[in-house]
Amino acid sequence: MSYTGIWVPFNFEGLGKELKKGQEFPEEGEHERQSGRISSKLAVWKLAKREDGGPVLLPNPF
Image 1: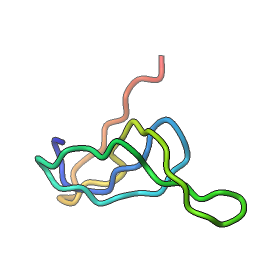
Image 2: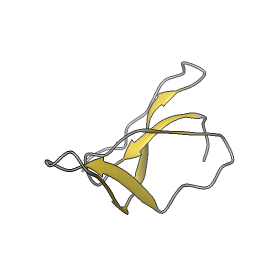
Image 3: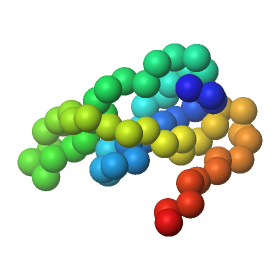
Image 4: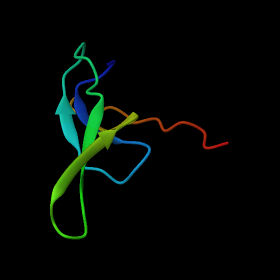
């Protein structure tokens, strides 16, 4: 990955995870079910917050 910071799943509402620059993305992300249990499923990741405080650029949704 290109930045150290908090990464969250892009394809579902999931829990954030701190990942370091150069680390591989995990295949699965975790999310909380309505029952309160934590489950995991395949995830596409997006940057939510950079450790260095730099800007977070979001992809164009179109």
